[in-house]
Each structure stands twice: as C-alpha cells, then as structure tokens.
Image (cartoon, rainbow, N blue to C red; front, side):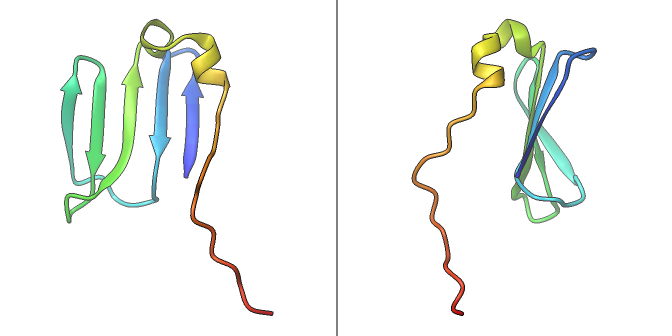
Length: 73
C-alpha cells in the first residue's frame, strides 16, 4: 500500500496494489476509484485534497487492526 500527496496538484492517491489500471469510476467530483481488469480496486485519487480533507487528515495516518501473518522460523 502506498499513499502519496502531490502538493502542486493538490492530489492524494492511495494505492492498494501495484497493477495496471483498466477502468475507473468517478465517485463524486474529484474522487476516482481505479480498477484492474478483474474490477478489483487498485487505488483512489482525491483531487483538491486540501479542500476535501484537512491538513491534519492528510498528514496523519492511523493503522489499526490489520491482520498480520507470521512467518515460521
């Protein structure tokens, strides 16, 4: 997973997996979901991110309750 903010474009992109974008769906003006060829979500783009989200939301990331696999030694 990768989260990238482009200050010049004021765009936030959350990439869930590295795959070729095959299609996208506009959720609302300035918010687009990218899909792969199987229609699985690859990422979400938010334009005018600083207007839609506060700077605190953009700069603060909280990760909670993720399933973590352990590797046997």
